Length: 184
Image 1 (cartoon, rainbow, N blue to C red):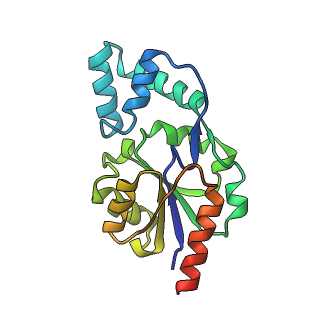
Image 2: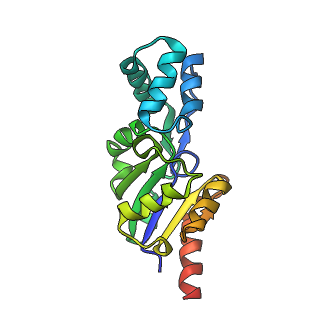
Image 3: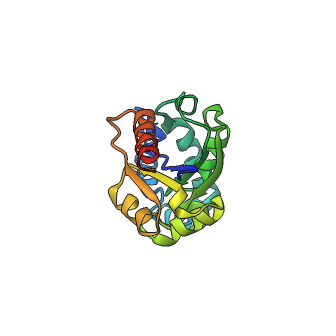
């Protein structure tokens, strides 16, 4: 029985605004989640640019606040009361930003590559997520826009949905929950 839904952020819960980025900001954006934890991210860009880690962190935080918006701001008003979590391969700074958004109030847990060091292509990402949520993997529905991440979640026993951003997220979630309840 699904008790928890873990959402990817970028491409699922959040979408990018149409903003002009500097070449450095574009490089930072492409590096989100690529270099492992936040320290690896900062170290990589400090070596690439000569900037201090603090300057890179501040630029990243500013970029996050300008770049993202909620795909479906009233999503949680359309869903049944379950436990909701974030499972993102983004740097942890996006979690700080997210926690300040009223649309994110229903999230009870936040898990990111930036704070954990695990990539979503690694089963350990999902094992640690289930531990954080204090749920059996079979009780977690994971929703991501990357098929490979969905397959990795399934490999540890989670249910996973490959979300296509052309679909309405609430409809996708409700259809999954309906299919789950009718098969039980």
